[in-house]
Image 1 (cartoon, rainbow, N blue to C red):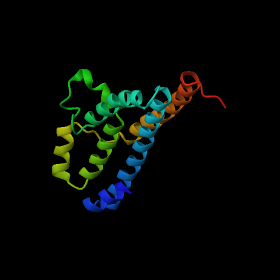
Image 2: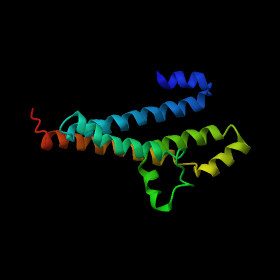
Image 3: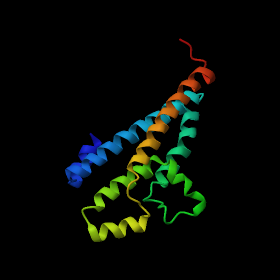
Image 4: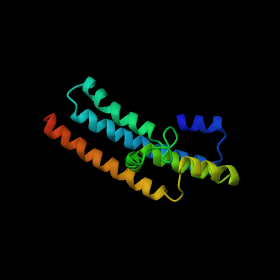
Length: 148
């Protein structure tokens, strides 16, 4: 619902809306899996919040817009490879840049966005979902001793 409200306010075209909705859903499942994993390994809600904060902060900062790959030190470029927000932002901005041939290319160059990373990004996010869900189950079984 939030994505549709945002798309209506921004007056996104249908092809861009499709990309935004797809990435929003993938991001939802990644963060849901991350928080479920953290909830499974944390002893209580306070510890879960403390554990979640670094992940959310780093992924939000290294989304390619707040801190771009072009501006980040080389030692931190690996974070963009695991940041779900970076893949989503890059894919959405690349799609939107198609409508602006001159300005779009300059924007992509400024932020260091590259085309044709949609499939890689989707694979990374799906793998993250699977790994986090498996880790959640292991955390519940071995750290919190949940039994059937």
